[in-house]
Length: 321
Image (cartoon, rainbow, N blue to C red):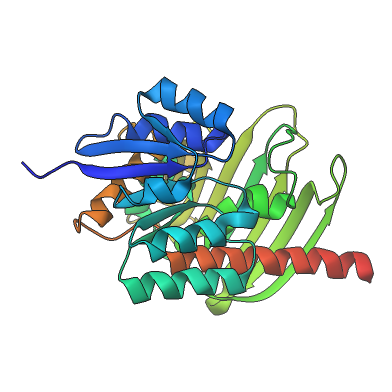
């Protein structure tokens, strides 16, 4: 049996706590410790998951082969560079960094050190998205809606970088990595100094289009994704992990039959249950062990960031007009 992989977590806030909780129980993994500049938060999480607290992240990095980073976006580059420079693979919570220059720096460093650099775009592991996968065949239109209640966490950045970036990454992934040819967007700040609700219309090469709306002003959480391709239509409830695929029945010709059911087949979408964060961490650990590639690479994280920043700039231009 192979040795347990020594890993750590840097950042023990709302997200880092859950990373530590899962890593503490993953098979073949040894959670060596957690690091945080806040000793109260760090000690609390360390005690919860039965590991050691490190006040100095460098002391933790000297003892691990991989680390999950869940610190504020403003220090993603610094912490990522610190880890990669010590020869430690990194799973960075989204967004990869605050700027494209910082993202390019981390991607280049990971490549130079031949280390896995993964980005935590967790919706790639959503049950509904996984269930739709076998039926996807060149979607051309996507409509995403994401609504969350207002919280203080995340309001240091616009809602585009806080929440919409999840759907922008999904769109890029589902459209096969096409580059956006045009971006139009509107948005307004309401309860924070930054934009709290935004809508983006994104056109891609090959005629694909995405309409994405995100708000952190809702009374409850909602995450919907609708996809259209030549062979049918997907309606996905990302919050519930469920979905339906409507497709034309084989052999049907326009004008044939009188009932909708004679022309259209409704396919319930199902995939095995599984905690998305745990699956994300399992994929990362597997990549570090050389058992596959990371689910979302540094380059893909950089692409999602680039599109999110284009949306943010489009919102700025809208207000400046």
